[in-house]
Image 1 (cartoon, rainbow, N blue to C red):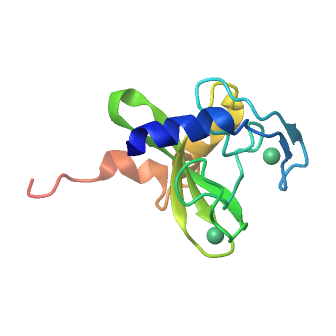
Image 2: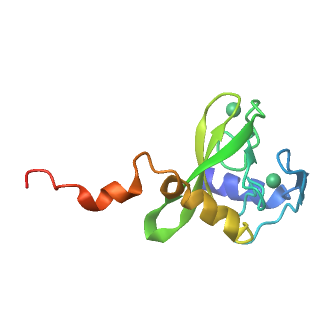
Length: 129
Ligand SMILES: [Zn+2]
Ligand SMILES: [Zn+2]
């Protein structure tokens, strides 16, 4: 029963286009590969509007910064978003038209900013050796 009502609502509510509050690009409502467009395909920022994906029931409306890429089961990528206003953390599936360069630079960000000098890596002894 619950599953059916959710499917009905998803088909009855057309995804609406919006202007990204971070980069000001016009974002089409339809996204290939996902039912719920929840972030900008150019800068990957999102808005804190959902409690569950697509429900638009959260009143926070804070900007959500993309902070990391997570790899899910079967290798599917998800973007980890953190709300600037309430600090909530959400993971959202990537969409088929997300900017690949933006995704890659987000994914390699920890490698570009290591907390230790890279040239130390080869000199480290293994624990217990
Ligand atoms: Zn944007
Ligand atoms: Zn929030």
